[in-house]
Length: 273
Image (cartoon, rainbow, N blue to C red; front, side, top):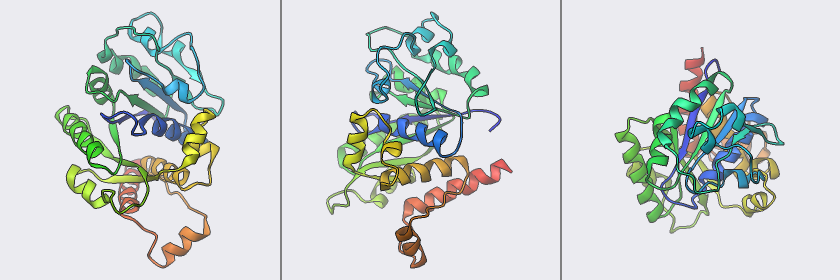
């Protein structure tokens, strides 16, 4: 990539898995696809991205950058697995979130991928993430309250002319009472690009401050992160597992989200030519 792509990951409901998604995609973009990757905590009021990754009490944060007390490059930390992170301050420090877009522009020349972990509240924090991003991914789950919040987030994003690439459907259990993928797409008008199963290994990874995609790479949730990252890059991802290959041969292994990913991948592959 000649110019870094800024991807905002949003939701307006806490506990949906937004921060977990950012840390895992950051790890996958770097580890699996060799992309120079930066993840930024843009939840300026209640941040926890750094805590997910074991970065405690950083000296310089995005808050310092937004208050013009530090250059943005001074707030960058390298994670042990190779990708970079700009943490936010856990202290209640008032900032102007709308300075974010201006401050991160210079980073496009340094990174291939920049992921923004937004606030789950409909405040200036999430609006700043929306306007600073080249595209948005919306994290949701298969229940009515979360879907309602996701629809609200999508409505606000569209009002800001922020392009929404797709939905990430998190914590699915395959139960009959869950909203179906088709129901969610019909309600939101946005394609689902990844279906992440509810997996105790994700919680286990969090307890060890390691992205699940690296902690448990053989789990389905980790494969979904890899497939999503590949599609966003316009690259093919070959799933070498025997069972998925067998299902594909029988035309039983291709879900709607797989088709949606292939559409995105094909479009981006053409753009790269």
